[in-house]
Image (cartoon, rainbow, N blue to C red; front, side, top):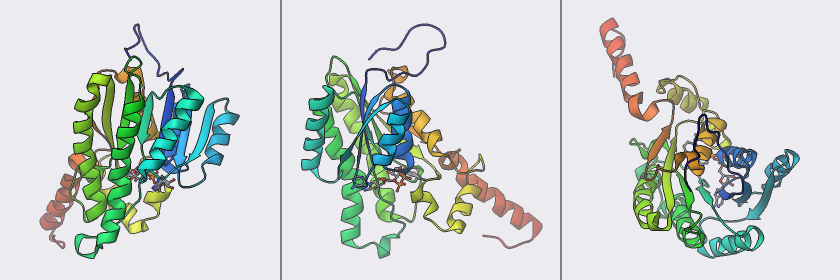
Length: 274
Ligand SMILES: NC(=O)c1ccc[n+]([C@@H]2O[C@H](COP(=O)([O-])OP(=O)(O)OC[C@H]3O[C@@H](n4cnc5c(N)ncnc54)[C@H](O)[C@@H]3O)[C@@H](O)[C@H]2O)c1
């Protein structure tokens, strides 16, 4: 995969085949739609039915297929890869997007919840990297995007969720070196609070608190993340590998200082401090 030459290149995934996990809704659905709009043939995996997303893509003239797929089951990865190769002949991109939320602190996280969150949010990407990395054609190259989180860049009370998202950074770094000889790039994306069923499932106080710690002062939209992922899938990012890209309105880089500024204000005006 080499970069297009000339002025003002546009993002194109023409003739590319891309797998998006967890694509029935939220970020995965937005990524699948945008990748198809850019010309990719998209295979959408999810434990939920993604037929509505497939229909939306087909109505727009794009190509998409839903595959019932649980990312935490290695055997289902083998089946997915076989199906994609049989029907499309190749795999050029993989977005390890599927994930579950778990806003529970260390002392209240049960061992079984720990294993479940790790197996989906971290194991899913591990199984995907192995199965798809083996199937990609070095002559075509490939791009794999691991969906981490801003909570993989800063500390968080959510013990299992945050640990899995931090570990995805390590997995990304490891995979980017291991798969480079096959001409496969691997990057991680770190969304902040994005308007999807996962984020809006939190209380409105949770949402407000996180917006208050976001320098750009708003929630992100699913397309804000999808734009970056499609860039990473495309040849425009052909020299980007092993990168950790925050799409969080500045939350991880500066969010703590937003809170510090509030505390300084409170102390200086004599209102309640920390
Ligand atoms: N929305 C946010 O604010 C936010 C922030 C940071 C990171 N993320 C990450 O982005 C990704 C997508 O999140 P979202 O907000 O769209 O969440 P969402 O809950 O709206 O969608 C997640 C999708 O993953 C699917 N899924 C869950 N377990 C699965 C499994 N075992 N196998 C296959 N599919 C499975 C779900 O069915 C669902 O369709 C997740 O990895 C999440 O951790 C989201």
